[in-house]
Image (tube, rainbow, N blue to C red):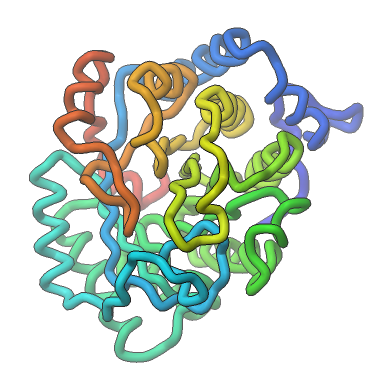
Length: 336
């Protein structure tokens, strides 16, 4: 994956390359002006009334050796999360069938691993991916770091998307994670892209980062070549026992600004309003949808953190006149 800066930005340097300073300026624009411009771009690239719906299942919970300061599944923190072994294939496919019945068209599976290790467990994950594809769902996994050969096996199994978030900007990275580097994350994205799998990568807000660190994150994502097809915007869920459990709640306007800026910088991506929605009002979420968010997770839990009740999601989408987007899975897998 080429990490050179791109020239398709709303504000660039004299050389035509997007700069971090330009992204900072974008994030600091008057909120309604920013949302208006992002909404206009969104409507030129996407169906304005459609929202893509996904379901996320934890297929292996807890016991991760990483020290990500936000994560309830890190073995380095004492959190309410209990360690669980990798689920059986049929149990996962049962959940996938239920998700499809509830309106999801993408099924995402997450394992609390630092990295993929070859062997029985990885082979089981490959079976899960094949099974999800046979159900006619888009497939996505997040398994930690992986190498080229493992990425190719996932592609051969039919995987559509690999999620590997960059989490935060480079200047703030070591304040959040010390057991791997940002370069490690980018290497995995390179392997995913080389295998022909779509990239799902975003970040987490509310980790004590500055506006500039948020700009660094968006700049890093936007200047990947090509940029991610899927960009999750998460807000910290303050889990007892984690490093950031005492962080102050994030102002809702920060989330709206990040969604709008992501839409302007990566106009073709699906922008996912992900973790932390339980702390947002309906009005705040509505402004995010207006600014370009066009995907949500259905279900009452995201891995191990709470998610809005499915009934409340359905009611909100109905209020806003938004409908679940029925995607052509075959076309998505082919890169359409």
